[in-house]
Image (cartoon, rainbow, N blue to C red):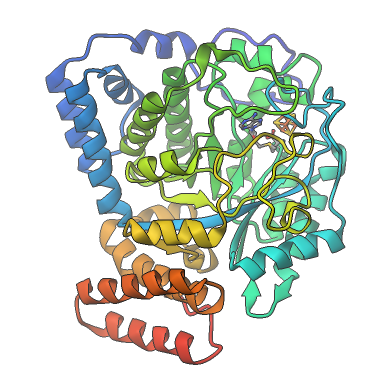
Length: 477
Ligand code: SAM
Ligand code: SF4
């Protein structure tokens, strides 16, 4: 398999290296065969996950006509599998102490300009209350890598978040983005009721990984990280998120790395990742960005469309690192989740107030989209998307292998659209500005007209009515 690690794999003994760099490089840059490209698109539209080789066929298809076909196929697949829902969440940065020195990150230990903080339980409650008052229901907690952020600390933080209630507001799903844990650690956070555990590989290219994660740091162990989510599955966390930080190395290689990772998890644990993230490198405090591998907007759209086509049933997350305009364009190619109203400076949801300011010293990197949740929702509604805060599957145990069975179009339309509409209406009634409520109510009316009559629709209409006229909330199918 891939070229050997520069480090002793002390922690990662037993880990499987499923990245064969030579093979992946060999698949790239081959001439495109139009018939083969169309065959691969047809397979994807039949909702077959693509192999790594098939994914490379799409990557190698660069002429404008084939690119347009790829975009159109991704749009179609997204509509058929996910409909027009977009799930909304917010990141909550808990602490930025870090023992690592990732060259691209504002939290790296050698960055003397970073203001280091860890929220206390009381400060966490304040941040969560502020998020609940905006209308958020789903959070992702973000941590630097540091002994003080061990599994027990993460679990306790999760419990604090779930226990914080503000008026009608509550957080119903807490996801995690933190350093890789060992088996016991994953068991500990699982028992606190986490949703998805995300670990981004950053880059699947070993040499680049070694160059951006200085030797001697915990993060320099490529295999410990590559194996993280396998340990999560083995410890019973079957809801995991993978990702690559685009801009460190050739985006085409990273896409093949992500697809290799998804297939590895699928083959070993009968269940692929729940989500894929594809953050692009952003400016950060004291970070000098090497422009060589930066991904252009055009290639970014291609990579999102190709990922959509390769892993039809995996949720795709587009973060506020990207500017609003690009987010709107890319959404149609297959994104299923976005964050909104995000603040990534620690304490930012109360301390930054309404001022849309960003302070480099207090952030991990700069955001591209700093619109409020209300503005993002209004924008989505105007584009005919259904903003959703649904958390039903996870709370009814529809995750992991089990979830994959359910992730078929009929099921999604029958459960997800109604759940999206009830959670949207909760938002409109409890938190929205008058103009947002107006466009939102109009969208709900249109959706109901388009929905076939029957018991499900009748029950949905009763629930919508209860939300409008009573304090009953959290009515999910
Ligand atoms: N410390 C943990 C880790 O490294 O896995 C988790 C939290 S880290 C704050 C979350 C992610 O932010 C990283 O995995 C990385 O992909 C991303 N990130 C770091 N620096 C970035 C930058 N300058 N621009 C965009 N994303 C960045
Ligand atoms: Fe620390 Fe994570 Fe930033 Fe690396 S990416 S310096 S591990 S917070």
